[in-house]
Image (tube, rainbow, N blue to C red; front, side, top):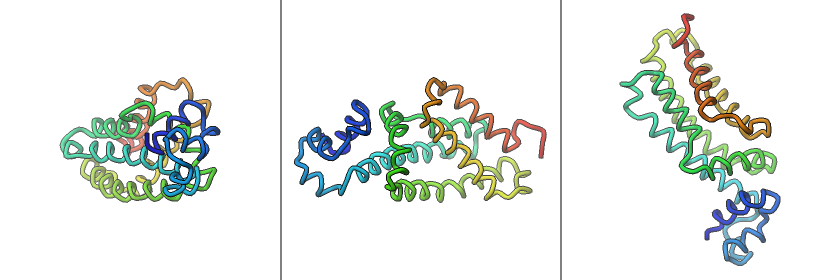
Amino acid sequence: MSIMQAAAHIVLSSGIECANTNAIAKRAGVSIGTLYQYYTDKDEIVADLLTEIVEKRQGRIRSALDMKVLTGSVSDSVSRVVDAILDSENEQDSHLEVLLLPLVFRLGSEKKVVATTEAMEGFLKPVLKALMVVSNPKLLKRDLDTVIFVLIHAIRGVFLGLCLPGAKGISKKKLKDELNHLILHYLNYKTGHS
């Protein structure tokens, strides 16, 4: 078992407080010295776990932004991107992310996660801008950089909200429906406003 798999297993089965370097090394079947050859502390392991999950989501988002975005309806495109953001290949990744995300920022090990996220935003901004202009030329009257900023951070805020205890029991399907509704209305696809 790899160090990352061992850390994920411990976090999911026993909680983040039990995921110390000694426990991770033992579960991985390596010496603590071997673990320290790869990681200086638990924070780095947590950051790598979260970065891996974020990179998987980014791959799904890139796939959702294929040529169908230009030929399909805006509603379908938004729905595909929302699905890519909220769905994962396995529930373990989703659960891990909810547990680890608040911790990464509290521990100060966010640089790698932030760099990965910023790289994705660098990819997304021009793609979203082009999609919006092609599909709704009225949006040219608005500051597209600000529109994109609001969209990205509104979605991020919803996602971060899922990490809070009050989010338990929220239906993923209903959450997706509301995000689709929010985005489409904000971009004036369903409203009569310009």
